[in-house]
Every structure is written in structure tokens, then in C-alpha cells.
Image 1: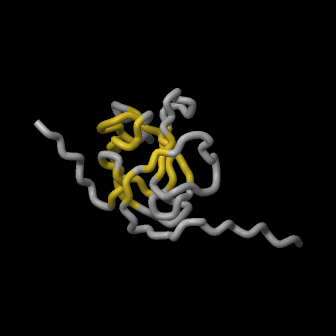
Image 2: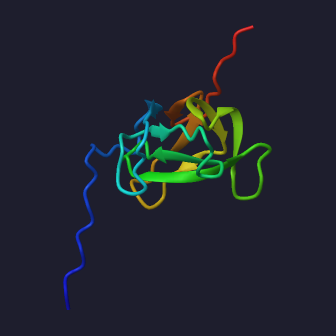
Length: 123
């Protein structure tokens, strides 16, 4: 019986407690594998049907989550910002990256953080 293919190691240091600002990545977005931890793809044409394409802040494994406002079943609520400008995005509830390093936290004002701290607005 042949040996299974080895699982590739993340090319970035793994830190499931990492807090990082969103980094915008332009085309081409990798549909599998890894990208810079915390990076997002600004889907300006909504090619991916209201899904936020992001790299896990803890290890960089790429994935996506459905985002809607108002929140629908099995989606994340777009509290502030837009998917086309993820560096200002706030989502609820928390994001739990299962299937990789297990990072669990929030996207608030374009920052991946471990505690929910909504962005401050100026009056």
C-alpha cells in the first residue's frame, strides 16, 4: 500500500494567539494552501458570493466564511465595513479556524484580535 502524501507544513510560524492587522492581497488569491497570516482578498466584484476570503491569523491556511447583513443562518454578520475593503471590516460572532492551528478570535476594524473590541468611532 502506498504511503499517503505528506501534509505540507505552514510556511509561516504558527501562533494561535497571534493578533495582526488585515493585509490586503491582490490577485491571484490561492484557493488552497497558505498565504500571509491575517491577509484577506478584497472581492470587489463579489465573485465568491459574499464570502470573506482570508488566511488564518494563526498559521496562514486559506479559507472563507459567508458574510451577510443582516445575519442569516450559518453566516457571520457584517457589523461594519465591506468585503471589498476587508482592512476596515468588523464581523460577529467570533471566527474559529478549525482544521488548522485552531486560532479563535475576532475581526474588528480590520484587525484580527483575541478579544472583541469594536473599533472606536470619533464624533
